[in-house]
Image 1 (cartoon, rainbow, N blue to C red):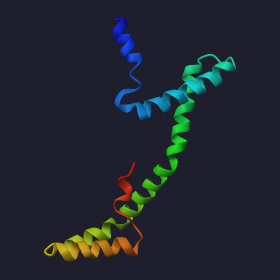
Image 2 (image 1 turned 45 degrees about the horizontal axis):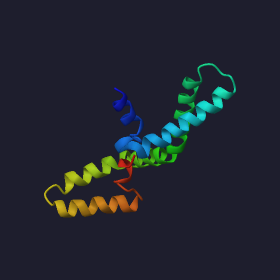
Image 3 (image 1 turned 60 degrees about the vertical axis):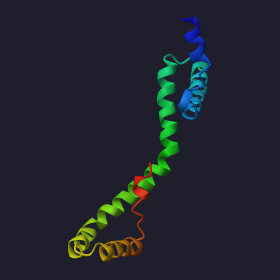
Length: 114
């Protein structure tokens, strides 16, 4: 049992250490700050505050993804029309769809980036 506990202590986060170590450090830092104020339930408040910090850091990515998704949804009827019109010639269909994306300044791959 002691060897297993030592192995876990020396694990350094394993495969996901590049994610878990900064998150754990942030959580420990927030907990230390909140606990020093004498607030009860410091772990719960620390977890909520950490969630808010992470959401704030990822907000620009989320915003650009939602904007791209909305642009793609607005163009969907046009794309469906082109697909119906050029279904017998996929090469021309892809060219026309690409032109629609370029004229409307839309990147079809931008909505898939988390």
